[in-house]
Length: 206
Image (cartoon, rainbow, N blue to C red; front, side, top):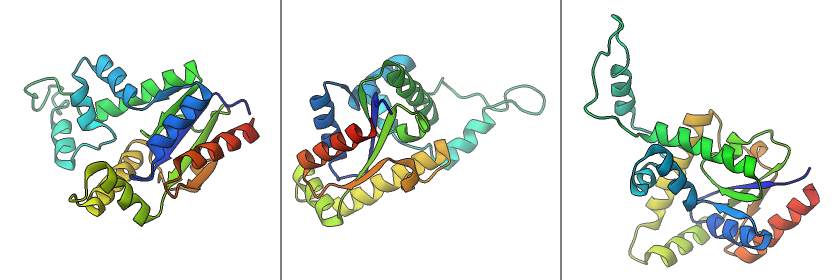
């Protein structure tokens, strides 16, 4: 197995994003995380902030119903015409998938989240890792990042649920299925040590 790409899926608050940055830096590889949003925004010709709002999101069920109504009616004409051309969560997800595939072709990159473990599933040159953490460690990390007064538990539950829905909606799998990954690792808020562990596992996989 000649590893050219690493994907890192993560629980919110596990430190997976920071771990990905450390691994990318030590390998001298490109980190595909926030930069991915800029590429998607460029492809969609919309501001990066608009894409960020839809990142790893699923459109509300009512919106999805309305989008069907905007489609072709029984008479061959549009049943309802939307007021403007919309860039929704499904469109962003489709472009995200395209950017991930392009990153894989280029190689030498670390891709964070966005269902990359599903987009590149079965690729023999990709190593898939999942980073998780104990609940108390996640709460501590979120408080240190966002401040002591925020409801860390609610944010974590919401983000976890959103990412679970995103992967299920777009790829039809449970992102917590261990069979999607080559390595599952508990961070314990030790980002450097976990980064070294992932690098070692990738070296063994070679």
